[in-house]
Image (cartoon, rainbow, N blue to C red; front, side, top):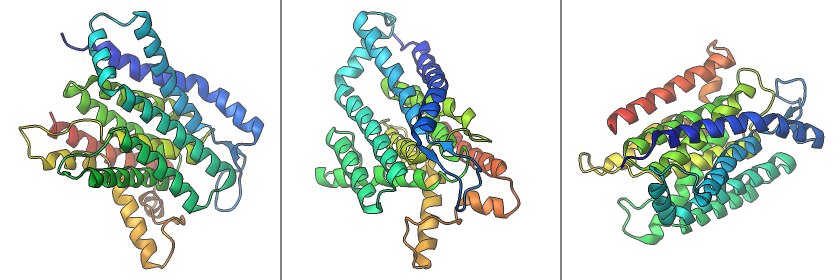
Length: 327
């Protein structure tokens, strides 16, 4: 019996609506407690903007997950999907719990950075710890990797790379959240196509939550992701790239490596470019500048909204190709 399509729709729509509903509450809390991005320096906004995005997106993911678990325990899930869900949770329950705990940990780490401007070494240590815990829960890259310790190292490096790629790209309204939604949706489509229902649901939860945040962030922003949100987006995409099984007997094993690289090509190539440019100028790679693709488009005459939309379109094109190749 096939997995019910309405479960996928419930994940996408549920996380979207929850995020949309809780964002004003988190925004009011941030403004009341002073958890804001104040104007000044190179910033273009002239009033404090609430750093509520990460909190809202995390809530948008956790509430549907907890609601789904409650329905499962109460026997409220449709009979068609119940055996598959139970089987998936039996196999991946610990992994799912670790991923959600890691997501919460990334939001806490980013929140502390937003509030106290943590040193780069402290922030990196927090990222490393959370990525290592996820790898220890057996969420690891194993293809082409025979040695378990090398598998750990590759997985941790990958998660850290994607976290920082998305953190680097959070430089214009809607850019990071939009790229996150596109990538999560693409991973979700491929997982659904391959019958990986639990992975597909998690991807669509992330996609829906990010889409629920975008109306308050693009083109004008009443709330920002902040480091809490960009850390969360990068962590989710790094993990979601590992969870689906992209290997198929119809394709060479290299396909399993190429697919996530293609889906995340825009943020990864942008990070590689800016790190190389900063290295050329003997500048620390973690110090921000205006050499990102988004900035270069603006320098060529695009408005900020047009620059973001152009990069979204480029990422979506990569995603469409990835789905087509994995059809």
